[in-house]
Length: 365
Image (cartoon, rainbow, N blue to C red; front, side, top):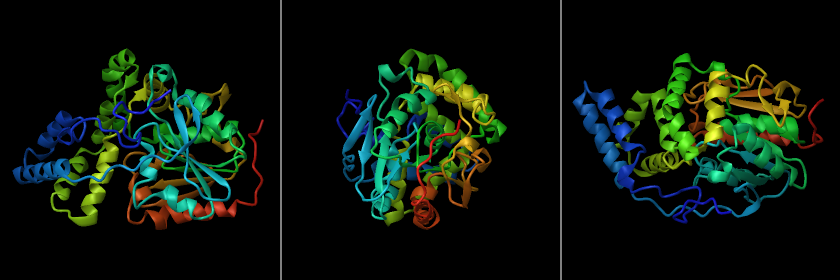
């Protein structure tokens, strides 16, 4: 089954609409811009100038995705080469996985050169057959079968919601080690206003999602913007004066943020109702494949990477197990920012190296 976007471009960089329609949804962005700059006409002009510059920026053709080496329910396991132990990266269901493989700032390609056989789970695009897969269902029917199809247990690395899902997988399948990057587990650790806003968003979007079978990416984008509306506008005002590599980097990251897939309705329902509202993971009540998931019961070595500057996944929501690395960069900056290699890539590689000699472990109980 082909879950690629209908225009045939890379699953990492689909062409949803003409560039002048970005950022998505543009009407909401313009409303936000007007509200945030109403008392400052000069700031409004700078932000609008940055918006126009972003829309008109030259963009190189997107790179083709790496070859698929396995498939499950339309999701692909993509190989990045390299020798040595397999490390499998699990990205979020939200936004494309290409944030781990941006040109010139690819954590995956760098790690493949450090003595690792690197693989990436590309979730693809949810079709009608996957609309009924919850977050747990994605673990059960996609992630676990792919892990079990490998020649040997992998090191598992999960980013954002992918880290939450990787914890469940590590509790249910043998892994060499588990590392999470900016992954939420204690959803009660999110600010109450953020949880309230997300509950309102779901209440407004639920009927649409249930009718379409997916929650459109635009609805999720509005939630992200709502976490820090002032910064959302200010970065476009700042972009108006950026040049060179800094400007190119801004365009690349904004395009990534605006090219996300929709979320299967069952996954959206579980995320909003069971995770954000009910904090089932943090309360020890989340079940995957019939098993209650307890990170503390995972026998494999564990690493938790968090950021004090993360506005998307606050560090208070992180799992409280294993070793811990704290960085100062933001949710995306820690992975692709100018200091990403020093503060995250190299420490992650060093931690994986320390556990090479340890045998793979199975879940307890």
